[in-house]
Image: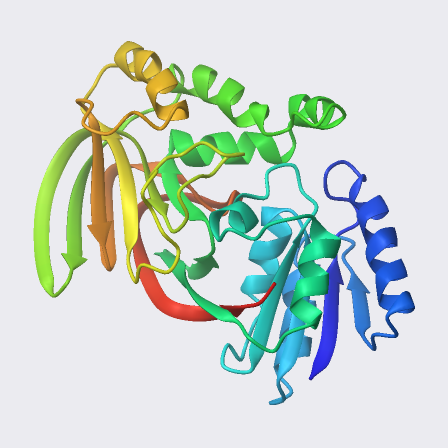
Length: 308
């Protein structure tokens, strides 16, 4: 099996370069044969993953970076059957690695992966929108949830907090402001789950986060009971409450104690379509996709093979 590395040394405001130096030393000391590609801009990880996984041979794909780099690489995989994937965390949040329960730092995960041929399978999600589709590992969402991710991409606050290892706090701070400025939307929801279809109409959608893992945005437990190998996704939908009440409920959300609160709803689904009366911001694993009036989330069960 050939080993391919996709490395974003710029993640966590450049601190990831130190992580790669440690990985490179490990590979040299253990005489591991590999090819490495360093990302220089948006889309690079996708193109590198396409090249690595389109040979028809079994490959070990190691991706070092934050959740955004991991998402780009995921969307480049062309052959999921022959790709054994290992995420090597070096971002400020690393929600996917935490979500699937990988323990230790990047070098420890790498060491375990190279010493075994065993792997586990996990679900991934897909969001379909006007003009395209995108896979996601952690979450995808609309509304305030997505707009915060858009702001965080180029946030000076995040870059400042990253210097102190506090980059994950960016998401919570941005959320407070966006709750009072983002437009809400009335929505029509069609949901499929275990062979049944349900339709509903809701007013004042603040955000809807389709979760594969339990937490996003640096550890915020949107769906505390979510498991990435459950075979379905769970949406956390906030709607039909005032902006002030939503703000007051945020401490419960951060503590993972928001279940059962009025205006907060959990929806298990295999597929969910949301049609809104006004375009809302959409993201996948924190990557901005645009503003759309209609989107669809789907679960792809047991699609990703992971070792580490």
